[in-house]
Image (cartoon, rainbow, N blue to C red; front, side):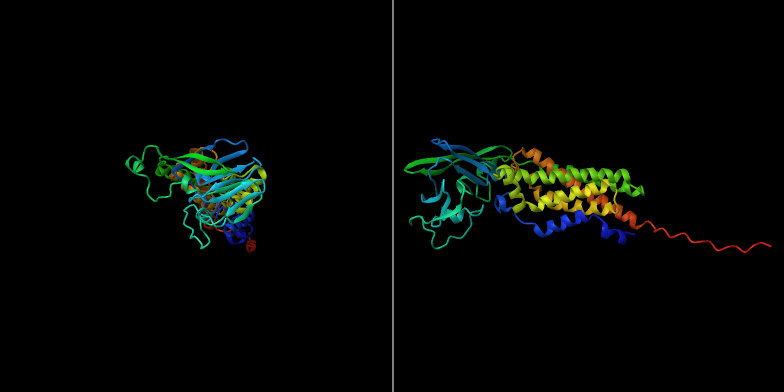
Length: 368
């Protein structure tokens, strides 16, 4: 029976999961090395002296700075050796190919090898990299790059610490400006507690598989699993939307472009889980297989890949870190729990004997 049902089971969920596997990649829309969480909170106090139309903010959980220049004049970002690094103005964004910062800032770790042309003393060689007057970049002055935390943090890791006040120099023509900000250590949460709650929750959801296995129809249990998968899939779609907003995406169009270019794997996972949930609610044949498959993709590609927030104090979303942890915990609970329940249902179905066609009994000899 299972063999005949599998080809029809969960076609939408299977397609979404397969596409997820084929397209899984780093989130290019907000930087290939955008962090999944951090314990260092980067904030900006703005540009001083203030310039109307010149705005700066922190994006990607502090991994990048974003500068927007609508003053109508070009403004330069100064590199680590005092050289022009970026030029942002009405004609777009240009980077100086001779600035070492151009290469060091390409990765969060700042470990890019410098080419021979990188010479801060050489005249700038400008190269256009964007048409709009907005630029985002890693800046080591606003980050903690050491592998070990600061000494004050090591002495009292359960307390919040000011690591440093940082500045990034700018130049508006001949006028010097500066971006100011702060870098703080924020104690991380207890990851064990979050994992313990998540495991208990997914076991509770998985127990629905035992309930469904005890009932040949399993209508109520499968309906409950369907509702949970729809909810988990919705969270799996909302979370990457939050990541795009935190990365600086502007408007619906910016969010959609970011999702399709870098977060398509998470989007497909969420949509596949929603489809499998509706499949189960409709009590379609072999919905248990669809539930198990979609749940596994949900737990792996939308839950486990974002589980760093359980152990990090700063999450790469525009809402609170606590809300981010709850969302990921629910995604893991619904995904892994649905997988367990679906497998239990499949196991119970495999042990159920196939009905045999009724045969016409042999006529008994007529009594004489």
